[in-house]
Image 1 (cartoon, rainbow, N blue to C red):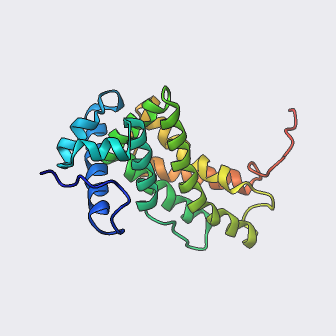
Image 2 (image 1 turned 30 degrees about the vertical axis):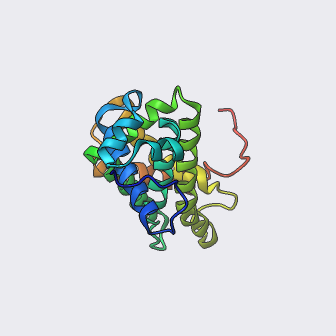
Length: 210
């Protein structure tokens, strides 16, 4: 018999249900990294995880449902923010975390697959947005604390600053193919910090024509 034929949610947290979920999400991540979303198959995931197919269909119902749960787990497991008391070094820590994630052979391929799937699958797109919302909310207090210290102007949109750190790194991953190294991460952090100090991310700031 395979690892589990029990309906999800009927076993206490940390028991068999948790072990089955961990095995399935590991297998799903591996399959996504290897073959992409289009070839994600619940029967193949069940085989990889040594879990009964009925368990997967009962709990996740579809590949999109499985990817949504995988992204939620990744958001929960990701490292917490770094707080150094200086905005630039906080943003640099964020940028380097993103850089390490995107250059990891498995994680980088996984993110490429999920982002590609999000362009054509609404449920995956929604799950991806929730993933990034969680991660941005985790790091936004670094900017809020910089506002309270007077490093950046009042009214600075903390979420926009955090988005500005990672955006150049995803551009390198998905579009340009330029090196995605620590130097690129540091430049992204420095650019975001400089723009924030200059008031570029103040909410409602009016654009002035040259």
